[in-house]
Length: 340
Image 1 (tube, rainbow, N blue to C red):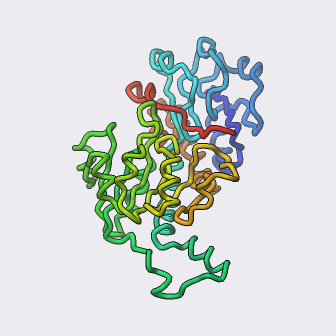
Image 2: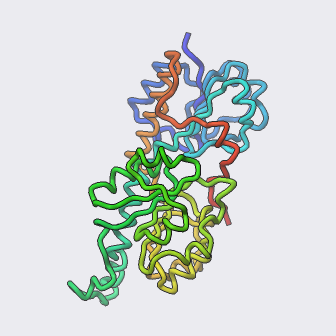
Image 3: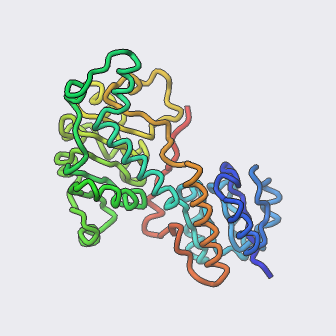
């Protein structure tokens, strides 16, 4: 008899994350319950929960119902984070694995972050704006404030799945890479070919600073005004994880004043208000939370889900998604931007 799996990925769409081949592979592997784009009605979910062994979901919006999940072995979250409002202690006690598809966004966000860094340093978007206004400067005169990524000191804040995907993309540029990550040992970072640094020193000595830290209860506005003031003149701050970790108002003021460049895909409020001051900053490269959710990358996410389903069905541990750990899950903060 096939394992029963509730597939309820809404807000995501089935075709968004699962290729036709992977949808068929999943249905060959397990008995798929629901598997539709719209959210599964709560009453139908509760009818299916007692016999389900796996739940594929986008967040936890079911309430306190784990006592009814008699056969549940695994929760797979495809939102890009670990689910909020889930009773993790009960999951750990009952050995229910909680998996996040966050690694599926690694390559997408890493590639985009590299693009943001080069765009800001070489003023590609800025030069495009000048040319459309008929104010362009040619050759040398158009490169007075630009610089290369090659051979520069690079700092990475947070060495999780996003940073691990970015690391190999940076190597061909001959950069020296420093990392600040209080959740990892210096020995581990050194073995990855990285230089562990204190946050203050990393910020003060890096020409490119990639902010890729997962939001936690401990790092809200970690990049304070005082730390932002340590950034080198004309350096590039690339914000790729969440605005949770930075004093965004202070960063906006400094970018408007020409202290450093900002390239960001995330904002403290999304959609960004039309009158937000950062929109007027010529030293900022702005992206509307587009680093992830590329069609090609999203089906890779679905492939990872089905690969781990296959492992679970075979009685093997899942290897492709990220597993929640007791030491860290208590420290995660919301990874969602606030709505207006």
